[in-house]
Image (cartoon, rainbow, N blue to C red; front, side):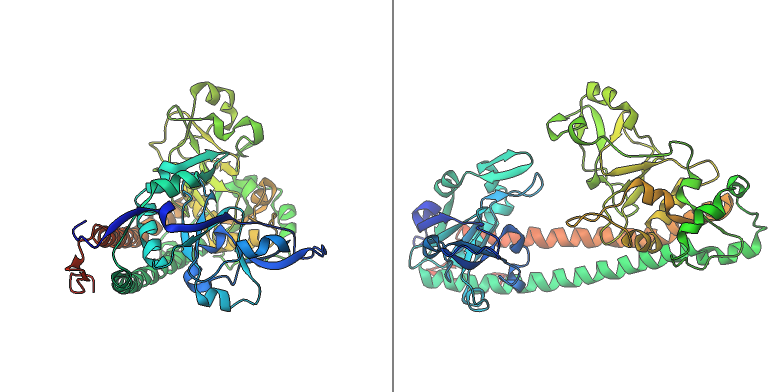
Length: 472
């Protein structure tokens, strides 16, 4: 430390009480020895600054356990279980007067969290800021265990192995005010970047809609003798198939175009899903070998190649019927804000499988694969699926629904022209998004640099916080 008034203590030395939370019984439980509570969960951490405990779960717990677990202003809540391979546990939040006052029921934390009560004379926000900094720096990774893709924190080791630096209380409060201003500036910049991303997303969506409805190539059709789609000569079942769409609002398309269903555009066996259940478990994944395409690889018309998962070559051979190849269309069965679909790139690894929850489609020669992926991704498709999806937690579709999706078809020449124009118009948008993502990362790096400077004591001069050192 650069100043003698700063001291370093373990988190265990700063905590006077720690106790795990409870999940309790359902709110309709009629047990007379239980009390109603609101349970703060890991899901409440993300938007805590805005929502506090408004979305906390209403539960009932034995009354005799309530007092020790009741959260009070100044308590820290530490996430100790849950997480995921991509998100370590170890996040924290501070309970304040607003959180306690806004709800009429007592607050406790869930059994996946732990209440930490600090000694008097310690600013909980100052401690939380250090814990946030350490979390982003990867400190909590050293105290994690993982089972079935759920991370757990070795709490006692974490408390004993986490050092917190503390100046006097008035300096803690003073530095907290400085960092509040840093946060406000960062949040303002981040909000502007978020708005830019929304504008770009709307632009790309409008280009996609124009492409999928024929408006993008209206001038091209006037200048070219546009022949009917060749596939129409084989689509003898089309009128019967489209009877199922009588109650579905189809967009207006050019007179030269035809409405078909996805299955009309696929060869026999042209749609299949990945291996389910015991055929491919998380324990089968290896550091290298055959590539596995998973949901995290599928974006909205983007293949996210950076996220790599592998299985052994022997496992690949056993599951080879699920193999995918460059040019295949991969479609996520989970339909959320938008349809996630992409064309597998030409440089895909030689041995690749598609995992469960990923449909693979292979189009016939009269249908351009990139054109089909655009039509699958357009808002019309999302509306179609949204009317008949399954699953309460994560809505999803099945292969029958994908087969019956209505798709407008034009000649192969126009399909390719639509793809060319769409890609040309969206190049600038993709470039801007890349710059926005870079700016967002720089903001995060800058915030981490400021915190590192603070917690090394470099913003303290003669026992006072230096309010002019580039962060005020």
